[in-house]
Length: 90
Image (cartoon, rainbow, N blue to C red):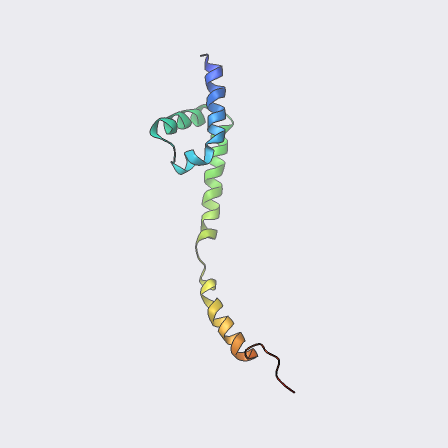
């Protein structure tokens, strides 16, 4: 198989398995193939680096915020201030 054909075959493989490769969910053989390709490919290498940066930038958003812990207290206070929500007789 020519180098070009191998590169294109690996390019398709890397495109289909970009997230699996990033997550380390490939077999050792597949991971080696993936790593070799993204090291050589002018498209896949930058794409992988971009995904790594994106994941790092989004990571703080997946962590629970301290604000979430005030929600139950706020709801309790609203319920107390508003009563049980049923209209009061006049």
